[in-house]
Image (cartoon, rainbow, N blue to C red; front, top):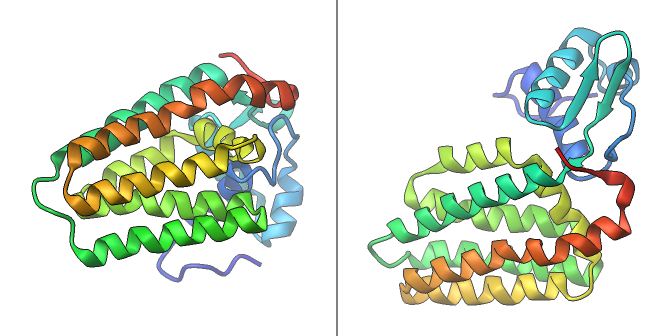
Length: 225
């Protein structure tokens, strides 16, 4: 039964629960969605399930066709490119907006999430890795006082986030991510925000080179818009 987050509405929790299942690939791209099955799983009526699915449709994560059914959207490669560019633009803008050194306590947060990523790689846990990865990137926005930008990215980059998860098993990807994160934290600790911005651009551009191998490995998960 859905019982998380006292301060959140039931509708919001239903939406987040279904979205998490899609983003973390527990619901696969192209998989048919049963509103009745979700209603029984979450122990809610069908109406809020439909509302959540309509919201996810607006985020290009669900396809709904009247009288035909509902499916998890396949990963749109054209949209992946757009979403990646949005993330690069916002993250670099945030890092370039910093004027004073980041506090030690904030560097400690970054190092904590980096440690969680290393543990996740050792365990082969892609979901834990990217949860810690997202939490680490969110710190930059918190420091800048721009958490609404981060919320926008989480809302609008579902295709990009799914292909990132699929990249976890590609050879050398997780190791390279950690190396770049280490360099990024080191640059922020020194107050070298120009170098941090450069690193984040390179970090988020990696997927352009990894994409073809991922698509070859999972051809049924992808479509071009």
